[in-house]
Image (cartoon, rainbow, N blue to C red):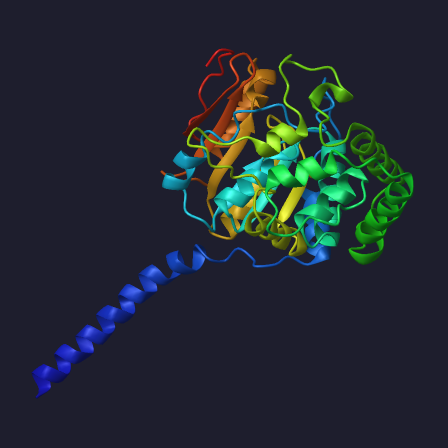
Length: 349
C-alpha cells in the first residue's frame, strides 16, 4: 500500500513539475491583449515612435501589383494569431486579413503615413461594410444596389459611375476628426489634423482609379491603380484583399475597433521604433510572424544604416517560421524569406 501511495505521490509531483515547466511557455504565447484601450494605444504610438522623417515619394497608395503572390506560401508556414509588422499604407490591410494576426504594428518613416493609417482607422470604425468604407474613403455617395454579397468587381463598377461629393467629403472629414479626437481622445496636433484633410482630399480628387503617381513622383513607371491593387490575385487566382469579401473586411475592421493595428513613426535603421516594438513583444512572450518590409532596404543598404538596421532586425523576437515579405521595384517581384539574418539587398533580386 505504501509503495502504491508513494508511486501516486511521485506521479502527481512529476506532473506538477512538468506543468510548471511548460505553463510559462504556454502562457507566454497568449499574453498579447485581445483589445487595447485608447490610452494605451496612443501611449504606444507616442512612446514607440521616432521624430518625423523624410521619404522622396508621397506613397498615398501602394505600387506593388505582385504583393499577393507570396500569400499561399505564407498561409502554409505562418499560423493565425501571431504578430504582424509592416510598412506603408493599404497593402498592410490585405496582409492582415490573410494572415490574421492577433496584433499588428505598421512602421513608416513619415508621420504622414501614421496619420493616413489613423484616417483609415476612423473610416473602418465608421463603416459597417465595404461599400460604406469606399464611400467614405473617396467621398462618393454609396450606390444603393450594393450589398454584402456584391462582388468586388461590381462594387468598383458601381463607384466608378458616381461623382465625388463635396458635402460628403466635408461631413466625412468632420466625422474622422471627431472619431479620433473626441471619441478616442488622441492628442493630434493642428498639423496632424490638416494632414488628414490633405490626405482625404487626395482620395476625393483621385477616386478609385488613382495610383501612386497621382500626387507623387514614382520610383517605377508601371504603377497600378487603387482599384487594380484591390482586384489583383495570387498566381492561383485567389484574391486575399481586405475588400474582396465581407469576412476579410470584418476581420480588419474588428482589429481597428479593438485598437490592435498600431501605426508607428520610425526608421527601420533608427534607434527606437523597432527596438521598442521588439521589447514590447518580448515582454508578452510573443514572436513576429510576418514582417512586410517592401523595398525599404533599398534606401538603407549603405553603412552605417545597414548595420543599424541589421541590429534592429536581430533584436526582434522570431522563430523558425517567422518570415519577411520583400519587394524589388526593379523587377516587381515579391519574395518570402526568413526574417533573420537580413539578406544583403540587391536591386534585382
